[in-house]
Length: 60
Image (cartoon, rainbow, N blue to C red):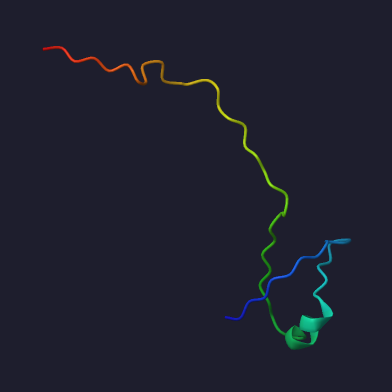
C-alpha cells in the first residue's frame, strides 16, 4: 500500500488532491481517512464516582 499525506480544506464535500499527486492517482480506487487538525481538549472529570478510592485500612 502506498500512502501520501497533505493538508487541504474540504469545499462542498469535495477533497481536492494537490496537482503533484493527482495524475499518479487518477482512475485508481483510493481509501480516504479524514483527521480534524484542531486539537480537542477533553474536560477533566472533577467528581469521583468511588468515594472510598484511596482510603485503604488494614485491621490486624
